[in-house]
Image (cartoon, rainbow, N blue to C red):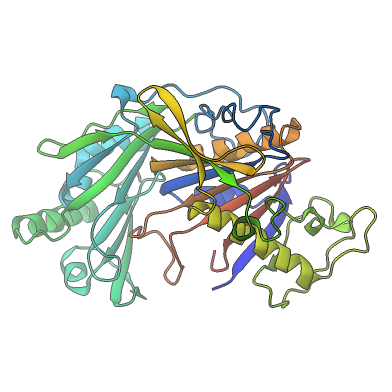
Length: 410
């Protein structure tokens, strides 16, 4: 399946980045890549003197979709836990007190519950999105007893996709549909065959600004707190790393057509030349045709993927107690640094990382920066037929512009 690339500006009213971030409710990992040139870090520090300070990269406050003025930070996670992993039944997911505290509008919260076990192509998989929707991918037998309608879909096997708006004001005790659904799910629990019981990664944020909130589960739910992990390493120069051995391939900024201004445009980046857009010539060159630019776009995207896969890891930093210990080589061979976070990350955190990069590039510290996020493999909110784990890559360039790489089905 091909990769679709869009070029736009964060400030453009039709910029696709807001929808692209918000429609990916659950993020399992995020990578931030910052280039280094001539053995120096982008902020002027030597490659052996340390990394860029990214401690606040995921903590920018705000529910807005742009990059303007998002400078205040959310507080630390309550109880020291960034998210919780809980074993819950389907009936516990729709517990009335639980919904009132975390999901309904009066709670002032956004709740995230992403399944961690089960197979999307074979098992009953359920999630709760920050909009308050229960999204389910049921097997035919469970669908017949769950008390909900659902459209047939192909997840490798026949499944039924159902959506229930738990935050709707009518979804309260005494409402016929709600009572029937709760009774059906409770009956599934009573049958004791484990149908619908699973582990979920759960988090909660204040709806107005993303401030993290504690999660309080129904009685009898087993849960444990988890932290989002952060690792970092240097990426060395090498033929396999960057193609020409000179450094990472910079995003082809000529993809922004001058005659289109800030208007978003798109083309295929799979190198087959089936896009019909032509790139604008850069300063002092003759310009590239669509196929050449598509090849360079694909090359940049592949390099970012190679960094995620560990290419160039001969130069990296580990920790020994509280002291950083250098392992391998560094110096002139270092072309970039990569930071990676893993856990349950929310769309606000990904947006924060993108804004962090936009500010860093616009300040002149870096010529570009890249943010890549990945979803969860068993996320039932992913569109049927979508490949991988919902990878999304932003290549942030000067002037508040960016390239957005996404699956062509997105």
